[in-house]
Image (tube, rainbow, N blue to C red; front, top):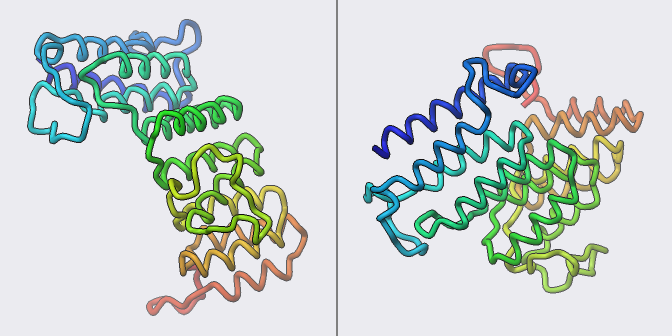
Length: 277
């Protein structure tokens, strides 16, 4: 039955995630600690897709309320398996999941979540060329990007030491409502998505780019971005404060770091010691 296969997928992927967090599969052929091979999650997903009750079910790939239909395939099942292989760096297996989803008529279409998971995997591998490829493929496939996907792109590019590419993603979000992209020296002409199709930035968007600037010791740029953050988002959080301190320290501006700490602390009522927000 479909329910049993879904439960098996959940159990196996949870096991793989736990083993990954503990240091990955045992040496040798990559088997899990209980003897299961790494491709077992994919084989279960194949069985789910080709099950009689599911296989004979068909529906339009437009937005429908599929949760009420027992024979439907859900995106969460594909993404659960995809996420495991992405975390493990098994991108060949990840693309087998994508291929299965794309060639199955009754499977849900690829979404921004799918691309976010793939981007994360290539970011961990330091493979920015394939991140570029995914970005172009998403735009060519008319994917409606969301802020989570763009944040994932920025984070992956920074992990790959490609700060300029992360900056380009961020600029596309900031310039989405701008009719003149040349006023502040930014340009989105070469970005695959049109400005009007790009999502707005959120607090995490700014913090991710701040992290990239801090790693490069670009304190002045980080400070300017933090001011823009106040204007656009209207707030900071403890991540912002810590990242700005890191940027100042890496630039050897210890006075600035102390000022940031002094200006962004608060007093907790039940504790007289000053604390970071």
